[in-house]
Amino acid sequence: MNRSSKAKYALYVLGILILTLGISFTIQSELGTSPFDALLVGLSINVGLTVGSWEIIIALILICCNSLLKRQRPEVLGLLTAFITGICIDMWLFLLHNLITPELWFGKLVCFGIGLNVIGLGTAIYLHTNFAPIPIDRLTLIIQELTRTNILFSRTFIYLAFLIIAMIFNGPIGVGTLLTVCLGGIILNFFMTFTKRILTNSSTSPDYDTDKNHSI
Image 1 (cartoon, rainbow, N blue to C red):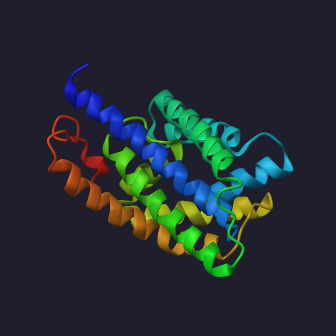
Image 2 (spheres, rainbow, N blue to C red; image 1 turned 90 degrees about the vertical axis):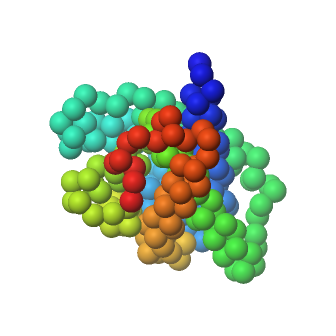
């Protein structure tokens, strides 16, 4: 394994760790999570299993959907990313369960705000490596490509779709969910541009940043 490959996989793991930390912050804020995470939490509470376990199950379903939309073979590696993500979510929730429990509304808002931005940063970092995106993030890129729009539109569209499903399963929907729908796409769009500029200029980027589908 050459140096650029090691750097690529290091960024990949770092991005997922940052992403799942942000997800855990939003869950701990108790203000409501992203529609997708609200669905995972709702399924965990009402059906059973952990939040991370449902991440993997839903990812398998989305891999099949993405395959149909792209008319190509399923991206099995996406399941690997979902598996790692699911484990990291459960890990962070376990570590933060008693450490971060804001009670005042201001503390909850700060906790949520940190989480929302950390999610955008982590997602942008690991997507930059162009290695096995989480199926929902691959779906975001597919919709962006099919509609010939940008990350902002495709992300917001997906959030609205999962918001409806999360409501059916009584997920933790609140003001934070509304903020995610309104701001999540904007934040991800910002960090995609930011990380592309920073990482492309670094010495580790040129060998693997060749997929223009990840550009804004």
